[in-house]
Every structure is written in structure tokens, then in C-alpha cells.
Image (cartoon, rainbow, N blue to C red; front, side, top):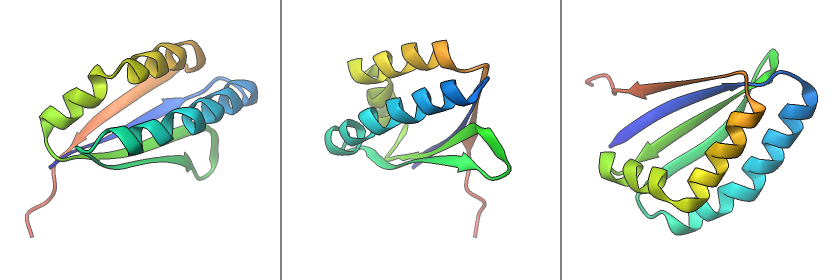
Length: 97
């Protein structure tokens, strides 16, 4: 499994609304067309109305690469760059049980 958390910071409410609309249009395709994407959940950050966080789990790094290679993902990321003030991605490693 390969997991990441990605935080997006937005400059204002207008950008946040546009971001949320973009996510709503893009998410169904990810869930329907990417069998290697196990979990893809956008979140609002409590107490930070201009922040969004995605929690993403993939079957492996190759599945993540396939996600990144989709034309729809490229279009999404291009538009996101116009909306956000910063993006921070964290690769997650599960703790041993």
C-alpha cells in the first residue's frame, strides 16, 4: 500500500468554493476509473476554512503513478495551481503493529 496526505491552502472563500466545485466534478472519475486507488477522501480542516486535505491510499506506487498520469488528474492539478497559495504532500508510512 502507498498512502499520502495532501494539504491545499486557499487564499479566500471564492477560491475555496471553486476548489470544492472542482473536486466534486473530478472525484467521481477517480473513484470509477482507477482500480488501484483504494481511498481518495477530500476533507475540510476543522478551524481552518481555507484549507483542504486529501487522504489518499493506493494499492502501490504504480497505482499512484497511474493516477498522476491520467489526463483528468493533469487538468485538475493545472486548475488547482491557479486556486491555491500552497500545497504540501506527505508520504505516509504505517507504524508497525
